[in-house]
Image (cartoon, rainbow, N blue to C red; front, top):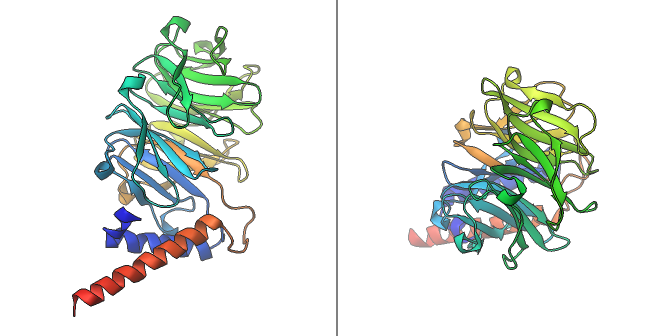
Length: 344
């Protein structure tokens, strides 16, 4: 809470966010996290939008961030990871309170431009794509044991999107240069196989997401004429992939994706319109922006989703919510006492 204590305006905003999120439509709030490549901020907000408080800035340039892009959550150990293309690093920090970020990987580990991160918390691994180094790599969650899984020798040029299937021991990535979505063994052995290519409509294919059943892939694509799209296809490459949303739905430059299958939603960061949006996972309807330039967003890139809503109207009981509420109230009380003492 050290940085929040030093910023009373943000603290009051934060307390209001927690109070509203804890007593509104859902006692448990869903949260969306993102990195802003232009402001250098790691932020989060209630998925119901700014009317329920937020967004709140976790970390920014005062913590050493420059151009944060990729974001991933470890909900077991309550940590958030992000990649920074300005510092050539991957860092992690606490989710439930503001702490000093820990740099776990840097340029000496071959990190240049980490644009997408995936975590395998159960087995203790972090995976990331680096288009500037033409690599897909893996390391332990603490940054040790770096291994290059696939690189230019495997035909990679600009790998961007990333998704992992732990059960099937498969890893997927997209290549913005070769217009491919490929898959390989999770340990880097064997030869990569192509799942989708230009003949399937891929042009400047970017970020990936894999559903919980590990059967459907979602990706963002910039088609001919700089036309933005979000697609879905079978993870095994069978069938014909379909476009869920495109420029006619208000998309500008969609980036990273996050799935909320329980509510049938797909969230995405749109860097072109400086918004965080969601749409129906089946492609029906029109996406809705929940945060945008009016909230200080400038170039949102990485995005991650935390589902803490078991059922609508559930009683307050979330350890995360109660902990943050107690801490916020404690800090507000302490700040008020200090201000009253200073005025004497």
